[in-house]
Image (tube, rainbow, N blue to C red; front, top):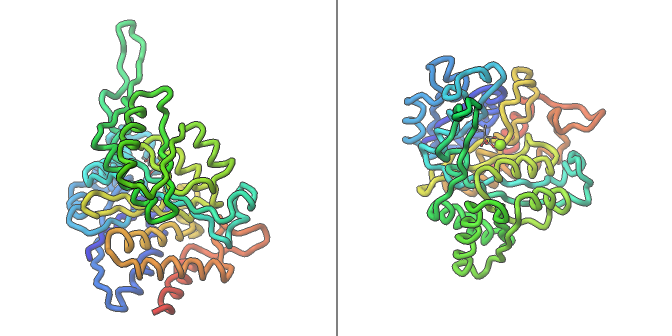
Length: 358
Ligand code: IPM
Ligand code: MG
């Protein structure tokens, strides 16, 4: 199994190093994992003048999975738009056709007090956002800022979805629900946006193929409210790229720490990119205090979705639970007065717990 490893910027390299400790345990046990590193994001602009160098793209295309850290940082914010680190990630998603983005949000019982919401609201929360990732206003044309006839600047982006684009991600939503509590909530803004009326129509047309799944629809503004009012009403949410971007950040905060949440971005042939949903956290980069658990849990998703090794995914997830149960916390999770461990101490502890299960 060939894995492209793209640490990226900010805390990316630090937390990817911890995920590699876990992969190393499996390699020592004889699991055939071939790892190859490549540059992406700001570091790739610095070294190769391109946030997604051709060699990096080629490596990803030739791999079974991509383990991705994080990209971006204030020092890149003044670069021309096509050189921005984010553009590297967006191009990679598009080139690999990673249209289905799975973003689980789960409250670990050990961390229920880390949420800003009351424990009785979030305790036991376990939802999954299926976000469309290669369409919508992120990629729609026309786009840009031009001067109109009056010499005034006018900005345009285009929200656009085809039947096919909606259908293929909606299938993912239904199938994710089938494997869980069998409830699918499709989120749109059909009261205002025609594009999302089509979204609702297409999702509704598919429902008869999944008679065991209970399909509901919700407007995005209401969904944003319901996520903080009563988040446990949700099992699987399926939505477009822009709404999914926003709602998944909101959902992540329900769990207490954005530093805990992994994600998978998949194409039709099972190739996946696995990344923590948090960003590059430039404010804490280089200090050895970042939480590596989202990155480590991303390797678990990689084993489950791209490498067909659910047994190894279970071991990683179990090890993370064990380490949390033993009381270990990085700074983002520690309660006042509770000591915090470093990034590498957390990685070492998880790797040791994985090894012990062998
Ligand atoms: C995400 C991020 C990206 C997005 C950025 C970095 C381009 O916010 O993965 O949610 O908007 O999709
Ligand atoms: Mg986002």
